[in-house]
Length: 110
Image (cartoon, rainbow, N blue to C red; front, side):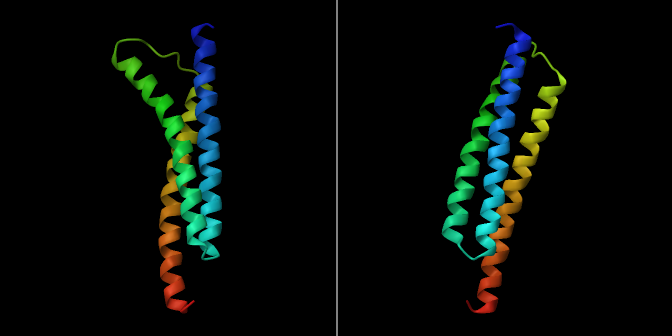
């Protein structure tokens, strides 16, 4: 496999896991909205597991670069970084949404 193919493989790996993380974060927000906090936390934990998989790929690429080996940069790799950022933001938002809904549940007395 040449370096360009390897870069595409790494990029798509990030996209897949980041996308799954983002979807799970969204599902966690849905569960929190229904005050199902156990399910919300479970989904958020799964989202974090997926996030860690793509973060591991990114860390490997950063380590390679730090060791003097160039990474082959292309649009798909840049796109994958967008997905990683969106996954991070989705998890952060889900954590806040869970916290807000816990407060709302107390206020409603449910």
